[in-house]
Image (tube, rainbow, N blue to C red; front, side, top):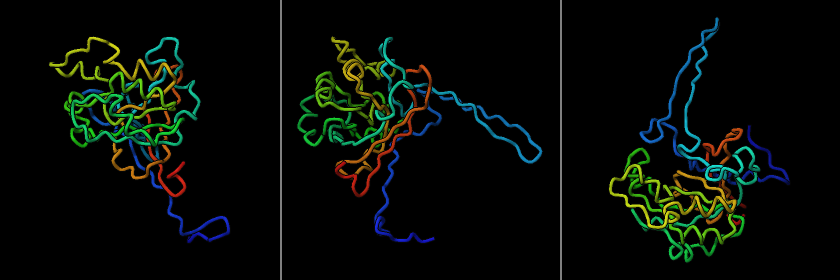
Length: 245
């Protein structure tokens, strides 16, 4: 049926646009998920259920402070308000492969970012190297220590990345990788952001589909008791009234 216009509604309003920012959970050489089907016959039909095995840090996910702090809180102890809210985006896609993203890169591009934002950092890494290939992980740009320290000054709620954001992520897969002299340089986001209560949404994609300067972001985890992180279905919500939220 057609909607009826009232004083409170306007049928000409454009509905909000949902943008999926999540990496599909599929066969993957790094994460190695398992999918075990089970068939249970019934008189009228057969139930089909699937037992799924997946890491708490596989595919698109959010880190809880417990991830790198034995005294940190688990994902189920984090208030829901931390997983959604007004968001902005910083585009570093022009840097390309194997580039550090430091303060000198981020600061000139972050003038529009507001305190309390969820900040998305766009590299378009998955458009250059599919997420199922090793090149995605071994050629990625990364956040340097100065970049992470700058992000920590912005009073953010969370940061989301469409690339493997710490240089150390490539260690297992790149035979030519040489660790940094300062180990904090290789784990910049984990040692700088999480201890300050800034959540990390990792291995997202499709940031290029976001067209508004400001939007809403949501990435809700499963309610996993006592666990250090969780897969998320991350989305951006654009629409009238959300471009200056």
